[in-house]
Length: 444
Image (cartoon, rainbow, N blue to C red):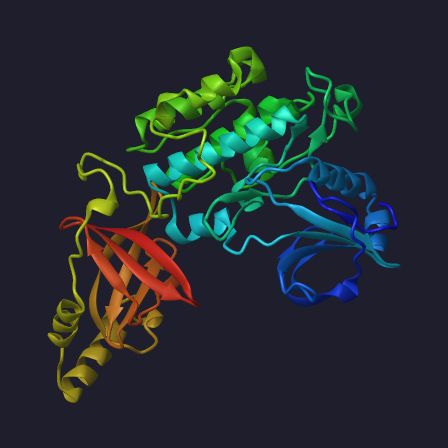
């Protein structure tokens, strides 16, 4: 990196900056050889995300080429769906990348909170990623580590793709592009994240633009199901499943989305929908799953609200949770809880009996169990059987009934809200540490 400071893409002239031009706040991200701080520029009051890299660590780990590549990529791209580089500078010990601040955080965090996205959300955000990849590949860049963790959200909830340390710059058909263009020079390097890496990378072939399309298929699968298509106890097991194309769609997976995923998760790179050999991005954008997407103005379209996905199944014929009406009001919850009021002597006797006879008593912190039963706690389309314990307090504990291990507690607060789907299925919405969670449960 040059010693002079530089402005980001599209600026009229270089603007020299130093660390003293910013007030550094909290850490908002950490990488293997970098730390990202929220910082405020003193002169303008503008908030930025500043990626700070320790020179000694970069040299020791031989990561100089990754840093230089990321800088080159960031200076080359200028699109609303990518994080923007505003300045770069350095001092004796560190390198600084001053980036746009994506205030809404990682898309992965929303997946964790909601477990999965409904079809409208999945369609829109997949379309934004498609539009971003079309631009990126058009300027001669492969991302090579596309995943929800590297997709941030700005104030308007549009995507901001980041982390280009693994990217590759190639010569496209028009001759645009610079830097690395010798695919063979990096044939044996492993780049990416296990759950999203394409099979051609694992079989020691060089990555291509289609490697990003494979990751797109994995992300769409995760949007709707709550899980990556290829899972295992360790990386080798995951890699084996990828190279053998071993994955299964859970019941209720959207048929159109399934067709698109199957056309993206193809072992041969040149057979994936969206590849040059298969008609490019126009063919991909024309897939029926994207019906209704305004490709020319998607950057201005307000993204749909992020809500979890409850698919149609044989026991749940309705389609999406967003059509539900609240099944329990605060008044009704109060009626249910107060219906269990007993005298102190009765409570003492029941608690003593519970301690002697109920194997789940040890998980209740000495509280009397009011109701208990098996419930499937769903994460996206995947469910895990849990024993739920409603106790005085009130508290909602849940325990793995097989291993008899305490798994957690639903935070009970004034924000707690339930939504009933039918007599077996309901949602619990709650807030913990200012984070909103929506969990699907099924009675047995």
